[in-house]
Image (tube, rainbow, N blue to C red):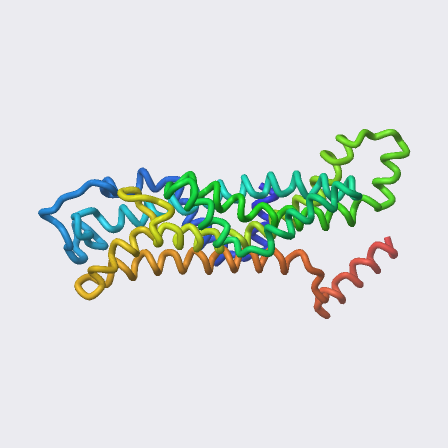
Length: 291
């Protein structure tokens, strides 16, 4: 509960509601969908807004609202998997590099630098091109492309913390390398990784849609916003809603994650104290002295 309260104070109610809405849809979308998102009914193809189908149907008679909900679930599931895989592997590499230094640091960071020199989407396209278009291949490709980012971030935090006096004290007291890394250095890097990941989620959602749009990610009939966009392009003039609705959903999600990451990052920075708060702190201090 304390973590939820801290998050609410950091990002504010509007952003919490926006992100919470997409998470709620992703988790409970299976029970909220009025129809099976993949069920076809050619007799009801290309219907407009109606009481039966709130957002109409596509060219195969599938309910658009149900497919939008399923697309949110697919996107958030993919983003979560990529962040977990890339964050975990990147933190392991960065922690080893930052703690041991020397030739280990040189070798690992040169590999990481090579990964950072190539655009992430290009790396993902190359991997998907080798293994073939598939949802899991797309997740693996994006995770590999994002590992260098988290490795470099973790390495910087660990390298700065490893020479701090409290780490030296732990060594003197006989703490093992494993204990120092697991109990002290990893938690020190975890905060920075989580802040970066919260802002990175929007970029990953966009890349998942890009790969699916190119036919290299989610494959039909599985619902995904990028795949829905490319399938609806031939019907843009007849039914523009089939393009607008998934595009708008993706845009709102990306903006929400960007705002979340920005708010969390700003909350970690010290802010100047207002005059009202300063006077309040002075009164509290004087009361403590008088008591």
